[in-house]
Length: 319
Image (cartoon, rainbow, N blue to C red; front, side, top):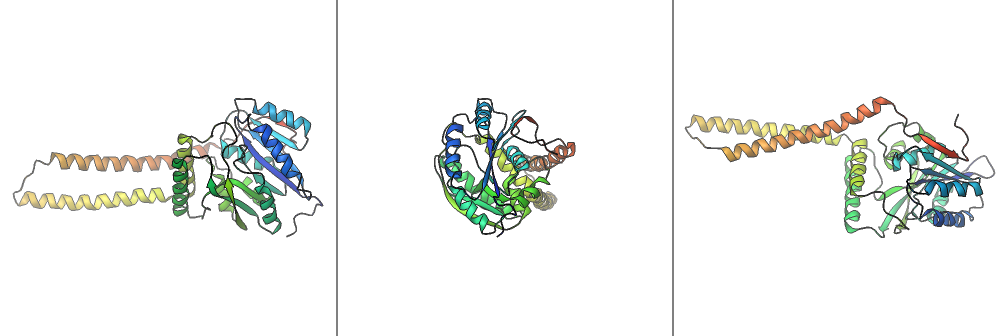
């Protein structure tokens, strides 16, 4: 593979940050240590502060004053992890771009393996988690179930047990820039754009410090976003359920009429209530599914920007 016409291809490291003041000093030390071995590359670091409420931005600003290769973006508020990744990809200038988290659960030593695959000619190198240290059994089980459900429902194959820790080439990053949808599921979008992709495998570490930024509520929202962004199957399920219950309701009506003509009468309160509650529940569920899709159409129609940058350090104005 010809990496670039330049003598020293540029590698961009994109790192979303949200309330990571305890992790940043150790992260920066680890990144400097590992990237010192990348003698064939120029390196830039793109930190995206997603509206942190702690001292994260000021720590990053201090680092950027010591190293001109450090770019720092600060959002005007918290826009979310997936939007922060999107901003990082927008501002990264590298021939190759690696997205990783700040908590060192994505170990920097894996970057060397990613670059080796990149040099072999792959456009996307995604990291597959073989283990998930420091996470609860509940989170491990639900994560496995989610990825398998998502892959079964999506028309686009999405690799199992992968996060956003991955390398993409410049042409993949440019392709992702053209996708302006509001409800973003970046790992799904990377699968959607295609190109030559390959996995590498790693042991995920426990979080270095601080708390997870994906509590249960956010995990559920993230899972729904992934499913609804890449599948219309829930709408088909709603239709199938409607036809199923309509068919058996019709049969039941015929049975009731036949029994009535034969002179049988039943009080029927319990069966009537069960039928009403069941059908009412199905109707509300299907209306809810429709509402989710319609709500997404409504939000997309507004054409709002994905994010607003409040401060930018060592970043050239975008043309």
